[in-house]
Amino acid sequence: MPLFKYKVIDNSGKSSELLIEGDSQADAARRIQRRGLMPLQFLGEGSESSRHVSLFGAKLDVVEFTDRLVPLLEASIPLERALTIIGESNDNQALSDTAAELRRGLHEGRKLSDLIRERGRAFPQLYAGVVQAGEEAGALPQVMAELRRFLMESQELKAFIVSASVYPAFIALSGILMLFFVLGVIVPKFAVALSGAGIESTATALLLSVSAFVQGYWWLLPLLLAGAVALLLQLRQENGPVRKMYDQWILRCPILDKLVLYSNLSRLCRTMAILMRSGVHLLNTVSIANRVVQNTAIKNSLLELSGELRQGQRMSSALGNSKYIPTLMLRMIAVGEETGAVETMLERVADRYETDLRRQVKRLLSLFEPLVIILLGLGVGLIVLLMFMAIMDMQGTV
Image (cartoon, rainbow, N blue to C red; front, side, top):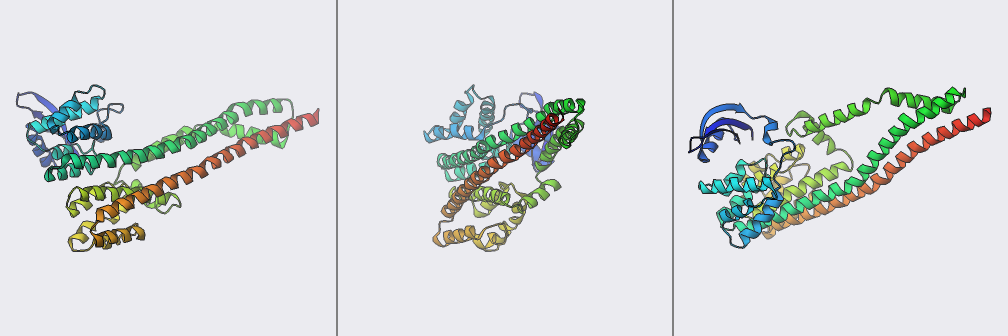
């Protein structure tokens, strides 16, 4: 949702500026009024940088927030009191502030799901829908417990991928820096010494050429880094043309296509399973689950899913219209529809793809580590060989 900036006044007459999300300017004004505030002046749309307090500011950890809230709810502590207990903790300022804001909203008679939906940038897409289902069913502790399990499993999967990638990335980065140091500092001094001694050879000429290239075009490295940062910023724009091209390209790239497909499909299936188990309507389930898909190509292929289900199609048949949905997933969902346990089958599909994703990441990293070492060894070995040949040429002239 876009951001809108308003000058507002509270019941005590104190004015302040507020940044709020909304589908439109009128919707943002209604959201402000539901908070018990009066909008005085529209100050324009908020910028992308205004979504967070600062680059290094505190950011809400949704997993920790849910992990602290669920045990209190399971202990039959009222929601407002549970938020008060969380807000009294001084070890996490963002957590305390969020709990205090939610508690004030409950004091105004508003639902927790509405309050979370207004803070959609801090909470995942499915969070508000799951909480709303728990409120309507009168089983908020049980639903929140299922949500906590899902969030913690997602965090563990992300942490596994990051931790498994740290060592190969460190090897590659340190090796590249070492090569630049050797080519830019050691090789020039060695080659200049040989050239000054009047020794001319093919090895010396190659060393001087490599040295001159590194010293003359060193600025290409920071330029490439700046280009990589600019590309990453473009990829963060979900509806941008660069992001759409990248999402389509990566699904055609060998090995990487499976990583992207497995991660998105496991997230899709896990979200639908949680929402269906929580009692959310099927059409709402599909709509919310589609928003958690990060690849725009896969997401666009599922845009007509709600309409097809509304026309009476089964989920397995409607999903089959997307070219990115594997046959195995369709068959398992079809079996779930026949047995009346679609959410169970969706969980099994999610488990299967998460397992496959871990296996693919391990396999890719197991190939990447020796490949990096071999390439770095070849580079260093070539430089050492040229230096050795230059020394042999020097001995031959003595």
